[in-house]
Image (cartoon, rainbow, N blue to C red; front, side):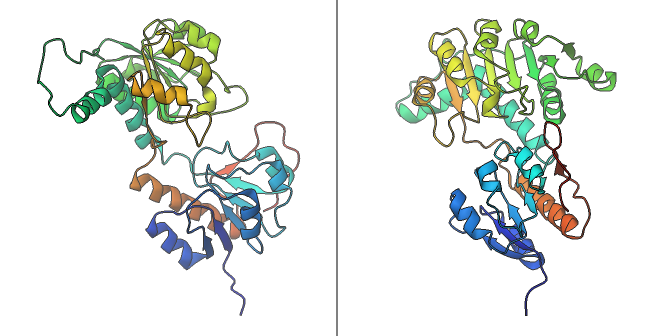
Amino acid sequence: MTSSKPKILVTRRLPASIEARMATLFETDVNDADLALSGEDILAGLEGKDVLVSTITDHIDAALIGRLPPSVRLIAQFGNGVDNIDLDAAWAAGLTVTNTPSVLTEDTADMATALMLALPRRLVEGTQMLLRDRAWAGWSPTSMLGHRLRGKALGIVGMGRIGTAVASRARAFGLNIHYYSRNRRPPAIEQPLEARYWDDLDAMLAEVDIVSLHTPLTRDTHHILSAARLDRMKPGAYLINVSRPELLEESALIERLESGQLAGAALDVFENRPGINPRLLALAEANRVVLTAHMASATLEARVEMGEAVIVNIRTFMDGHQPPHRLLPDGPLPRAAKG
């Protein structure tokens, strides 16, 4: 007898509890190898399926969307970002696309704050020094001098949920909060944080000591921190990016770190994924950059909540209703999506 359960392809391994729950609700095919699938592998795995459960490592461009089996009606992204999906092409093909927003706020804000502490206080460098030099001589008044956070100015680019959560944590450390955002936040948010709004990003960059990127990636925010804008930053300033690599002109950042124009950077995302620019690795070895392995949202709690959101999106869609986390293209809508 043919199963009446929705048939789904899951392109990467998910937490065991989520995979078990999916297996009870859906006819589930999971990529047990847990390696990024090629476009051809995705197409082959989707034969007869209703739903593609994708992740940021899946390149779902217009060409692949044009070849999807007709049975596929929903792309349920496991993740907040959907830079890997051509939303315009998906909409034009009559597909519904969903993501898992909101669940990553606290964990991502924690990570940004941790990097904000690690960078000026040289925490990674101090750890590496002990591991490298087993005969460490001990404390010295002039050893491992970093910089105090209290009293410094933090400039947040993008004051949405995550940006606001970062501001709240940073304020507790005594940082002065500045922010640039498409829209000014209401007094109920600004006043407790004593946050100053800037409608001119260039002007804000010239005044702050630390810049932290938290704006979504759109056509307008691609390389929002361009070479010209990096030059607007104060000499000796720091940069934090746990958001999207495309927000930053990475090659320009590398040049300004190598020259000493900027004091340092902490990056959780990289422009030439999955590899990392060798010059960035050299800067990390020279303790000019802190690099982490795209782990801002990497908590078990977040991954389980993301999986639950995927399940809700699938079940709602397959029951004939609009899923709660449906996404629309950035530009004009070509035509209505089916489902």
